[in-house]
Image 1: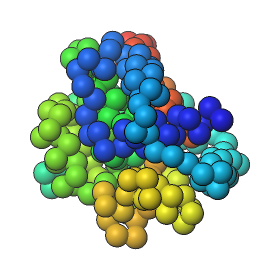
Image 2: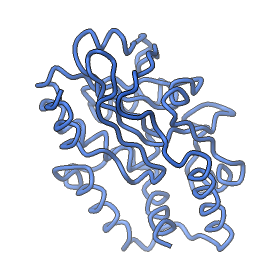
Image 3: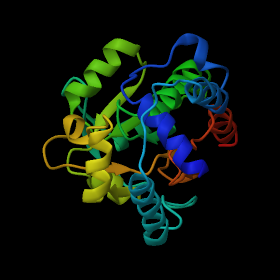
Length: 243
């Protein structure tokens, strides 16, 4: 039941591309809890039938069964990749690692309010992360034009890269394809994944964060099928400090 209530909050807030400054707090969890508390009291939240709840429950259980521990683990070499950024330029992990460590963040898309809160938390801590000569790279399956709108609106100081064939999220063991039933339900509640990813593309990553040292080795990570859970900026900075 807890999962269903939280999902309702996500649907109600799904069209919010940016969190307000008052909701950003000092970290991700504080921002998340404030947002959920605020939305819980909103009477305009979407209504769900018993069948809707069962579809969501089945999808979560299937995802957990198919991949109980998503994400590459600490000690593994991070797979290299080259992706387009929000403005159509190519960005590679290998080139960024020449500058120093990389904080690699996978998020579902601009339509996801929890993703936006996490990006804003990273934005707020960008200077601290940069002080360790680290670069933030955010990867999403959405089209570059959607990322461009997001960057221009929210002034993110880091690259947002588009994984247009899902290859990168697969290589990091984060690939998750919405079932036809869940995709239909999402769309009926205003979460049109195809509108952001492109026609026929309904895969999203399990939200994950990897702290990668300059030699390309994963030194810290967090990934969870519960999309409300994200790696705190404080934990990212702690990992960078330990490099």
